[in-house]
Image (cartoon, rainbow, N blue to C red; front, side):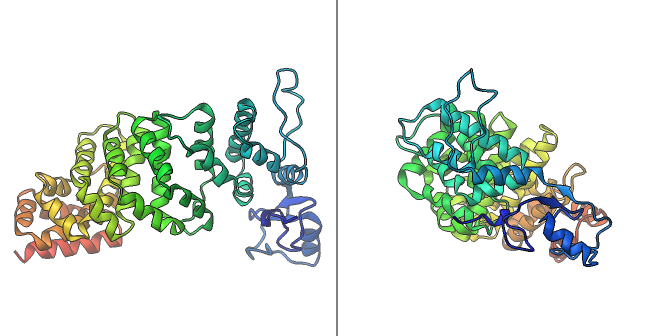
Amino acid sequence: MSIPHLFRCPISLDIFTDPVTLCTGQTYDRPCIERWLAAGHRTCPVTMQPLGDAVLVPNRTLRHLIERWLSADKQVPEPTAADDDHAEEPSLAALKRCLQSGAGAGANAKVAALKKVATLASESDVGRACMLQLGFLPVLLQLVFHAPAPWDLSEQEELALQCALSLLPSSPTSPQHGCLNMLKTEASLTSLVRLLERGRARVRAGLCRLLETIATAAATRELALAAAASPRVWQAVLPLLHHGDERVSGAAVRAVAAVCCAAEPARGNAVHHGAVPELLKCLSWASAGKGGGAAAAAASSALAALEALAASEAGRRAVAREPGAVRALVRHVFMMSSSNEGSEHAVAALLAVCRESRAARSEAAGAGVVTQVLLLLQSQCGTRAKTKARSLLKLFRSM
């Protein structure tokens, strides 16, 4: 039986028997770390940080997970009202077997298993990592994307989607993202598009987050390009930039920005399917002061997408041709309520567009770009923003 690496002590490399955590956040088996400290060491073996104190805090969550994993021969019981309070906690392996069971398995049992997965994922980073390593993510995705493609998700499928989202690795280089490549199939893409078009708000927001992950993960580059090449995906996602629910519109603009930043072919497809005018509508919404912090975050993502699109010739032409686009970018060079990051994106997009278009330069000058850039340079913006702002200022002073 293969032991998950998170269940191994970093000193002995054996499974934990009594996991304890130091003040540095690292966990060790009690006998091992006690021997280390008894030898006179006053540093953390893994991080080599000095120990302000040598208190050993029992890691009960990890111990409980190990005990559940070791009891993998237990099955998930069909829940009943009589034994809700006394049913034995199923192991992770038993939960996974329940989720993998065929259509003939009880729907109530699967829902109960998904709720346990959701609880464990929300309570513990270790729990999420263990379920990832034990292969829960592809099982959960299979519960969501299956034929025939639904118009909306059942309770079981929506729970599976939320569980899958909670397990997504934060690092874009994680090989665990590879299981998302199951969405390359025509049936899965069809299901994704239909759910983006017709699903409930929470489902749409979750799927946009999934698209964002696909666009940024190293293991899903081909899938990201396939999604970006699909007219159906753009037709489903771009209208969500203006969805009435901020969860949906915010997730959608982040997904579009991630796809636009992914690679040159994706940028070309975004321009072809009308991303530029839709992104500019997001900026207009943010400028109107609607949505508070959510509006500012959406504007920053929209500006990041426009900067990425302006890196391509087609993108620069689309921005230069779009009525009011240059003026909108100038307004976002310096806004008291905006982040420096958004300002940096606006400056970079203007720099790319104005270098090639005399008409864009004239429009930007008329909109007061020099004043906006000077205000930005006097602010507490970052080094990169200032470098780009100086380049933009130099361009206009040479006119």
